[in-house]
Length: 306
Image (tube, rainbow, N blue to C red; front, side, top):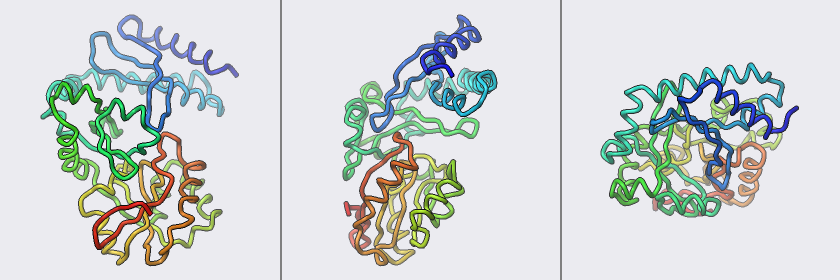
């Protein structure tokens, strides 16, 4: 089996042959959340303002698991050509150009998400953010394309060009996020039907002997950056009233939080270990949110550290 560097060279060579001189193909290290850095191949038509990013390590891992290079490459090529065609369409290109040039247009797609402050110091130097407990609220443009979630992270240079402050982003995102990504609340066993490896996680859950724990999850209907649903006005209050209890809130990933009636578990000790176990065994590092529980207090309508 070839090493990753050799594979990366072969992949870039094949893509260059396929797209010829019409496209720029560049290798770059892309900063993700939680300090994660990924090698990416950026493909963009010359003269265009937008393109796509492919992460070769994901493809390499697929081949390592037994997929053939040509099979994976053909699938990748098909997906890339489709995405580039969509991005190159007047509808998509016009939308993105309008967003970059016009804040009022961009604000229609503006949403927020949560990241851990401590693990994202480098990222937070470059993006507008609002502190929230030990977390930070950051902002992105969100839309659906061909059934897939698409985002563009908002950077400080966007605000400088638009002439707006982070507080304005927060006000718009408070309106947009619940509308574009409506909250979803349900029993935790239904979560297994929404994740990539439900059988694996269900087996893990039973092995840890938490199966009798009365637990719910809160996310959004796209199951995408859904932990931010704790910010939706009135959502935690409505849930707490529905189950007649304050809540222990476990930030199990950036995509969801788990909720436990605190009248059943008045002491939150031990849940930090559960969160850390979930992070280490079930969640990609890029999707870690926090490593300790929170508590929602109905009387004051506040989320606080447990």
